[in-house]
Length: 410
Ligand code: HSE
Image (cartoon, rainbow, N blue to C red; front, side, top):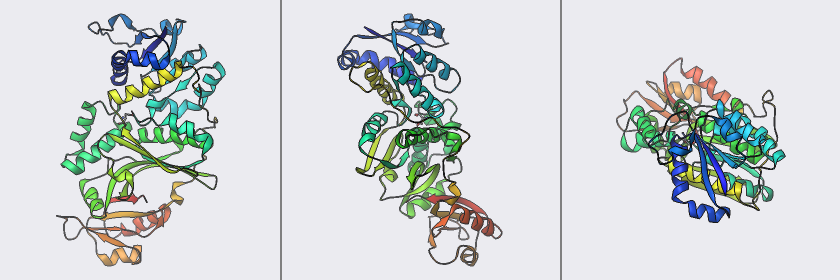
């Protein structure tokens, strides 16, 4: 009998316990042994829970119990979880986690400890919710070189953007709904400001490019400035507005960025809506592969946690993943100001002549939306580096107020 401890009885923790007991027989068959959850760690009381006898408040009880083989860290955040995970690994227990903040910051170090101790450190649930993503990617790495990852990696923001556009819902109501569904982080700023996407793209980039990428090095923008008119212009330009995590390796240089953008309708990411996530991975040999599924929520995420638990206990499964540790003081990522895109610009009140004077008249495409005031102007620029774009924005702002701007991500 293998005993499991679940740390944290929030959305993902309670989902994990629920799905564990629902699918216990199947999980035992897959793991090749009897399983049970011996402890659930939470500071709150759950006296009416059917699992009331499993609750403990002191992590030491779990750490010191040699029967516990796997610890599922589902507390989130970076405060207690790092210590709990590190101590569990050092004590020879496998750890699975949904904690992207922890993996994005400490992944390389924790993987190294797991390898030294001959146990597993798995984090399938940390990126893409219920999408089987980390393990398939890891398994493909020996036979292909990944050159680019681009994805919709945050269910909450994708849900908000979808509801705003399809149902005319305002930002606050859509966010509230995402919170009620259990999609959003405890502090939803992490979702809407792009930090959650940043952590996830760092994990994928670290795994695929083989060295630890720190969130602090990644230029990150969120969705708080996106308006319904931006989406209407995007729609009329055959695009959808999405929050994108992007990582690319080009001639040995790394690009990693998070930003909302116009996504052309011929890119599969443009049709990914609601809480769904999608990740396009480009490999030199395989070409493009798409991963798609529910990116947040109690049960999808719980299923990813449970698949890690089973894999940690199964014989003949590769116990550890690996990427190089790196130093947070050294930033390996190219300056995003050197990247080239086309850009969408919306001006409150402008003359076409002023726009041509600043942006030139080659390559500019004016775009439209219903019910716009006549003096409002919106257009897509020619290809420019971010640096050139910033300069032109500063120039046009002498004549007109910019009320919307986004990259076109092709
Ligand atoms: N808040 C996250 C999201 C949860 O909305 O994607 C899943 O990581």
